[in-house]
Length: 258
Image (tube, rainbow, N blue to C red; front, side):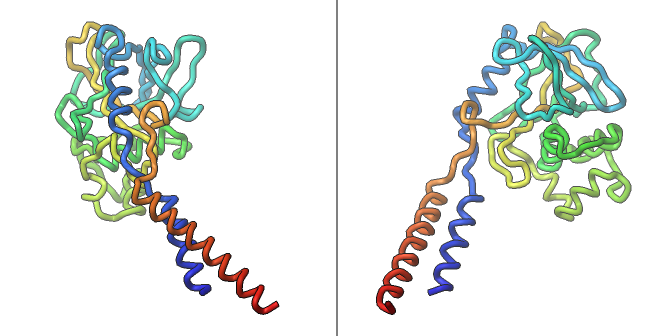
């Protein structure tokens, strides 16, 4: 009976780690609301750069733009109605905007693509989430930007030298695994409850094609949080029932012995 008890406990623990896809309808509402800002040109911001690391400064919240909930205090900040986030360019062969710019989240139903046509990959999404949430505490911005763009297929990098590519290989040594197409509205164990997007950048009137940036949001109950799958709930329920039956059986046995 002890083996049965252990099995049910194992099933119950496994169920707690299983997740369904993002609530797509709610997440799409979030994307559409972001892109509808400022007469459908998206969030407006100014930017400054240091090497490959870029700081975007714009308004906060639904009226103006940036949701900084996914970002650690080391990667975001601000005061009053202004906020900033730190990010990286993800199409290096396109010129910067020369004045205040506008950004819209790209999503085509399964991918997020930069304005040069390169789709977000799992590796790029993972690395940027690690950076934005502060899991990567210090960063060589040039090497990190190179790693992101290698993952997007835009540059070639040396995996034995680049610190961040070596980090990916230590987790899974299959390069194709990290270069698989990434859907911001799907759940990935490596990333959790986050959605990572290419933010297509234009002038504030919606014209022009400028260097795109990468942006992450944390999926919450209000914008598309993950929920347990029905199958997961069934497994979890079976596990709990099994544990209850096990306890009842043990109590009965103790009563018989007494």
